[in-house]
Length: 275
Image (cartoon, rainbow, N blue to C red; front, top):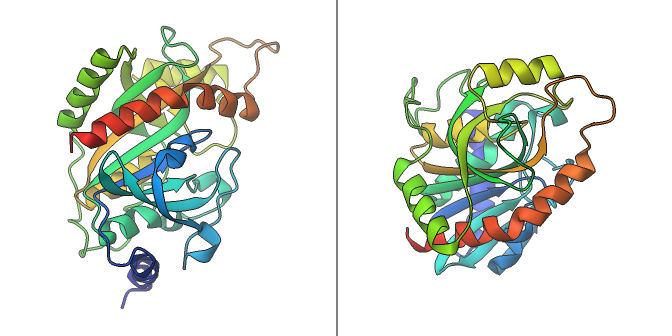
């Protein structure tokens, strides 16, 4: 057996036993400062990543490093409180392994969230942005021998983010009085924040927000045939001009994400109810 598939299967088998055969409908990946949604789950199990075979360790600020499963909005779900990043030194195979594990467990929908810098000048810290599309500036996780078990060699990415889920989220937000942005997320490797020249370039090519995650997970999720909904919390305004008095800071990002987490949690729960 392909070692990559063996590692995925081992992790899935371990979690399947812990779940006592229950099948999650929805998988959720929570980014920097957004672990609060995990606390809303009626947890039947909370497993540190270090206990799960072949999982990496989450070292990023604001990532708790737990795999949770239980009930949320009447659905059986599994959630990652924190993700793995390419900048942590992990290969893309390891960064995206949990997505394939979720697919083997039976997940059909993947909800992804992140903290992101606002490139669009109209965006303000605390804004919630539905991801309608992305630009990938990271190594593609699908490079290498194709996982025929999961999907085809050349998966289409015309609509990586599910239009029906986006429409439902917009309707829910309107009903709940939650203001939403919608835009394009650009994923780069990090861990350095962007220079003003890079910020101008990214915005110029069509990006509204920038971060260091999410895109690899979405590429693998779509390869597996999962329906994807993505949301960014805008935690800071990116610097278009050199200004040494306005600097990016990881702790500030986590605090800003935490402040917006309640609105994102409500939106995710209401959206999961509709599935």
